[in-house]
Image (cartoon, rainbow, N blue to C red; front, side, top):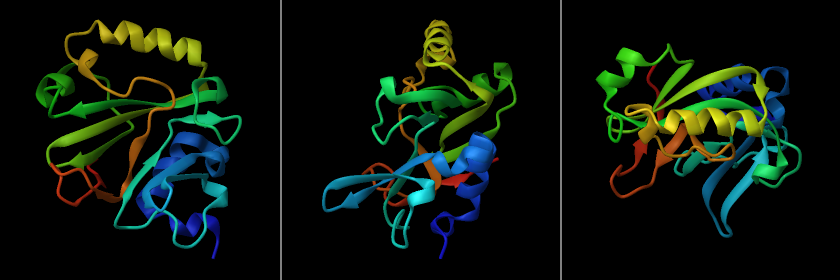
Length: 172
């Protein structure tokens, strides 16, 4: 079994589109191990990793080392607007936002909307962009604005009490 066989097809497509030829270097993690959270590069995944009954996430940035901190970011590859449909009105968002690369329904009626950044961007440029966005009355309400924030893969379940085992899935 190859390390990438641990990913479902939707997660593979998302990571391949986001990270291009370097998608094996995407950082993924999941909850539920005896240590709490486990994280690995896609290329190092083993059978049993990213279990279907746990929260499964990815980092939107390529990392220089296996430490998910801002100083370890090589390039930010995906910008995600979180909480569309709950904190951010979906209709207003769709009216003004550019067409997204993907939508993941992370819990009923709540979406993470992703934009692939071709070639990526520096942490400094990303932070400046997100700071400008924060002033916007619509997408300025988004959480998870740092370059190493974790976002859901379309795999596994949402274990938050409010989501009650919701299967995260690609919505468009």
